[in-house]
Length: 229
Image 1 (cartoon, rainbow, N blue to C red):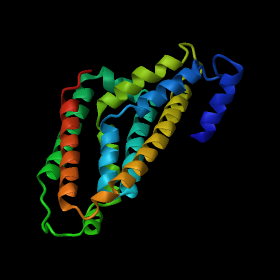
Image 2: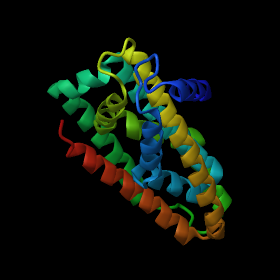
Image 3: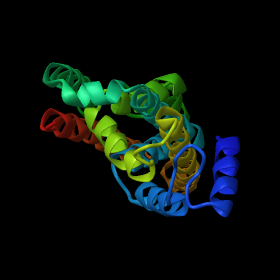
Image 4: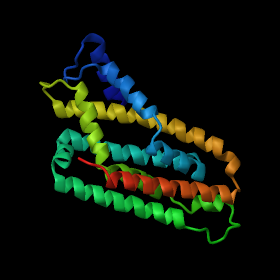
């Protein structure tokens, strides 16, 4: 990703449009940073996991979310996202699978109760694996057709209509967008983990964090269920 960023930056320094047909590169960078900084469900999930599990949980959530976005970037480059948006059947299938999964995870977390209310904070942190946090973050994006719609709407704005390598241009822009977003989310995760240090040992606070993450999943599931093509 760093190589793609430096390569694209070098192109733009000498021309309005790159050999790949990418134009207004710095407008893309600024727009992407503003979109990444704007708080949303992904940020809420990262903050919640950071408060619950420390910086490792926040990093796992960040990498999962970035992986989910990466799948849509590759799909957009290959044209699969366009097929998803164009096909009512495919869109509806992905939408309902994603909504059902998120609501199930959300209800599980929202209704769960610790077996031992006096369990220590460290024991609670170890009860949720980092791999689980990663895959939950990834699937919230992979199973969300609105993410595919976002990349299909945003990335083409910076690719020439007659670009010789549209797929490569899409991929380059997508990788840069995700790379910048990952850096920002990692910073958010570390900051949230440090701020949450005071919650250590507070079972009541941990319970409310769990409920908050569960409610977030249900909210995302509802948003996906109501999504239109």
